[in-house]
Amino acid sequence: MRMRFVLVPAIVMVCLLGAQVTTRVRQPSAAGTLYPADREALRAAVQRYLGEADVMVPPGRIVACIAPHDGYGLSGEVAAHAFKPLQTGQYSRIIVLSPSHYAAFRGCSIAAVQAYRTPMGEVVIDGPAIQQLTLCTLISRRAVKYEQTAVTDEQSVGKSKQRARKSDQPSRKARQRLFGDKRPPLRFQPPPDRVQIHEMEYGIEVVLPFLQQQVGLFGLVPIVVGECVNDYTGEIDDDAILTIVRELRNVMDDETLIIVSTNLTHYGNAYSYRPFKDNVLENVEALDKQAIRLLLEKDYEGFKAYLKKTENPICGKTALLILLKLLPKETIGHLLDYDISARKTNNLEDAVGYASLVFVDPTRLPAEPHPEAAIPPPVSGPTPPQETGAIPPPSTDARPSPDKPTEEGK
Image (cartoon, one colour):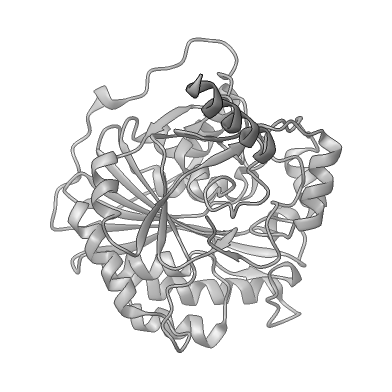
């Protein structure tokens, strides 16, 4: 009888609050918009981009990569160059640093899940490394929650339009030319009253299929880097950067690879950045080439000065600063490929720069490949269904996000 009185209020609370599920698997949010949602179509696209990438990397051990994270139709060719030199089983741990596109918070955040899912399968989280990292007050772990309330396409589109802004995406017409206007039904969404750090974040997700194809099985350390690593004056907090770098070094070994997922210059009204009106392609490339030169030179102070002088809204600027402090002195950077979104969309109102870079330690031998780490080809059939509480691809052209990043909530 006592148990009955306990259960009844609990059931009432669930009904009042809505059915929210804390999941152990982070579901894909960009499948069907930034890359194919079908497993075989995604695998074919990744293989095609990798096959077309012509890469010559000097001998040595690749310790870090920088790759873009836009729609595959725009940045897939460039991104493939960063991953082409990697071989199966070379790395047992891969740390991916991605900017936060939807929430502002201090430090870094890691999804409290056991795996990241893509149409090509699940990538297992490196639990011991994450447990050690999250002992640091600047690196927190956050649950991933989905709301089990079905909504119609019209409701989804309406809500998304109310809060949508263009993030790292081209214009609507450009996206329709590249990806079509398919709008799959939206059955589940992240809870609307909760700040979404990981549920909708795509910076880590879009690079995973390339890693699944090239490296195979590995332990993932997915880190979303907040933009608020600043001191009381609003300047970059070097001490905070160094603290994060020190913690990352504690979990790095000879089989660890660092990847920064970021685009470069974001030009246009959509990004509130329009320092010039003419010669857009030439000026965007000039801005990017300045940043790339400083990154290749591992010039931390120079890159900070560049960001302050140009006010260039590079989405992953904080992650790049972490990388510059994290790279060993012996490493040498190499630019593998570069492009601008406007060259594909022919839309000079929005232009985003993409670059693939690798950092090689010439004093060390390349990491030894292990063919047994390859992911076996799937049995023919449709893509496995998402687990209950999953969020399918968004149904709007613009990535839904607030006009300004919100502070991290509970």
